[in-house]
Image (tube, rainbow, N blue to C red; front, side):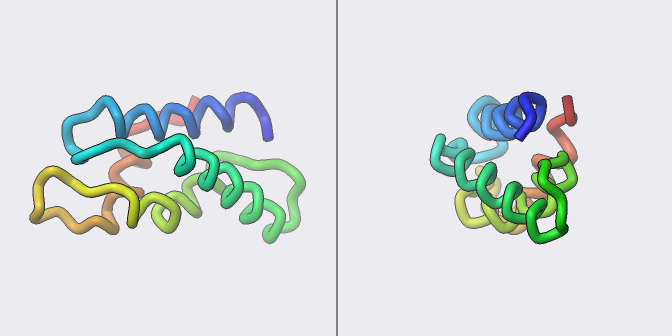
Length: 90
């Protein structure tokens, strides 16, 4: 995994901790799960390296049950999409 992918995952986790739209941020274990899942997704696609698209492909599945919006009317499954929309790829 390249350094910029690690930076991207860190930015995703950090965004959840610094923004006021989630009740609480992602844990370090969630970041590790995101790394492992992205590596696995890349391997299943037949490549030996992780790209931002691999991280984004697994993001909703990895963080959807870990994040809750402060606004109870928001669908928790939108958490991954919210992160993709708000965190730039380095």
